[in-house]
Image (cartoon, rainbow, N blue to C red; front, side, top):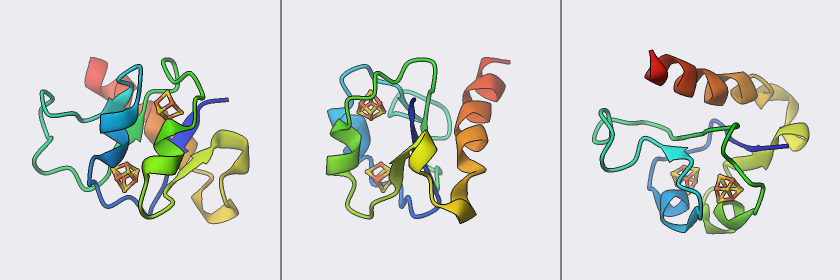
Amino acid sequence: MPYVIAAPCVADYSCVEVCPVNCIAPGPADPGFAKAEQLYINPALCIHCEACVEACPVNAIFETKALPEPWKAYAQINADYFTQAAR
Ligand code: SF4
Ligand code: SF4
């Protein structure tokens, strides 16, 4: 299952720098990069390597099935970001 970024994210981009498949957005080349309040993981591309989990200073990243109950909706929120970005 892919990893998901939840509410604690402070958009410091530590995870972007370590992701081996560049599936976390927005990145520096994407629109909205400067104003992003949180980042998102593309569930279609994530290879479940956990590198981002260790890099995150605020523990905002969870495997989908391990999302804490209050943040379950973030699985869909992360996926929707890429659906909408593709439109
Ligand atoms: S688990 Fe690995 S592939 Fe998935 S978002 Fe994190 S760093 Fe990228
Ligand atoms: S490392 Fe954590 S806080 Fe930083 S952008 Fe990624 S998810 Fe957000």
